[in-house]
Structures are given as C-alpha cells and as structure tokens.
Length: 133
Image (cartoon, rainbow, N blue to C red; front, top):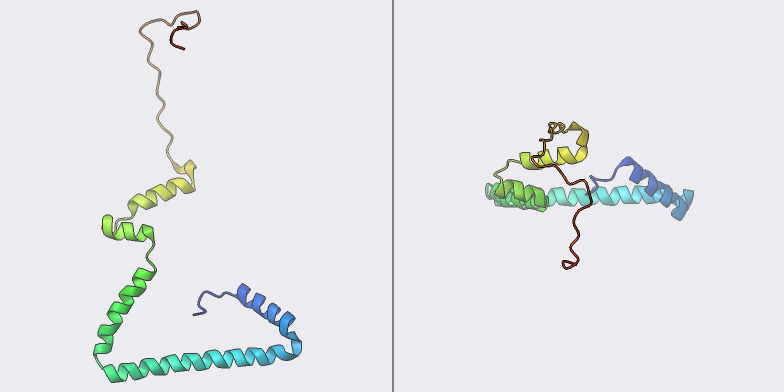
C-alpha cells in the first residue's frame, strides 16, 4: 500500500504533522498510526491464512486469476500492443525511443552528389501567366 512512498514524502509528512499537531502530540500520533497499520496488516495476514487453510489446494487455483488481473492492471497501451500484436517483440518501440532520446546517435545520411542538369536553366525570371492567377 505504501510501497511508493519514499523518504522525501515521509519527511514532508513529518514536517506537516509537526506543523499541524505540534511537537507535543506528534509522537503519540505516529505511535497510533504505526499501531493501526500494524493491526491492519495483521488482519489481512490472518484473513489470508484462514482462507488458505479453509480452501486448501484450491487457494492456489484462485491466485492464478488474481495474478492475471494484477498483470492486466499494470498493462499500458504500449505493453498491450507489444504482447498482442507484435508477439512480445518490442524492438519497434525501442528503435523509435532510441531515436527520440538522442538524435546524434543516428548515422548521417550518405552525401548525394547532384547530377548535372540536362538542359540549361533560363537566365531570366520565370515566365508569368496572368490568366492562371
């Protein structure tokens, strides 16, 4: 649940708690929050263990669809395209993203020497057609 909370966020929460609750009540609030989290985690662990004991081997059969749902939850459009349309080959996306990241890594195009014109260009201005405008 709090796997994505880093040290910076924790520091912000402590500073906010210090400002809102004050230095007298902050340690009690931290103890209460830690106890509530510990108790909730214990309830979840006990419920999981009880379910595993009651269901027996079918519990593992229940876990497979849940893990598939978890995979779908994290599915991005790019991952869906790669998995279903490109059979897991994401070389198309990696090539495009590598070009977008650093255009200097692209090999320069070969120099093309201009071919001499077969007919000489007129020296004067281009002809103007007043009817065409």
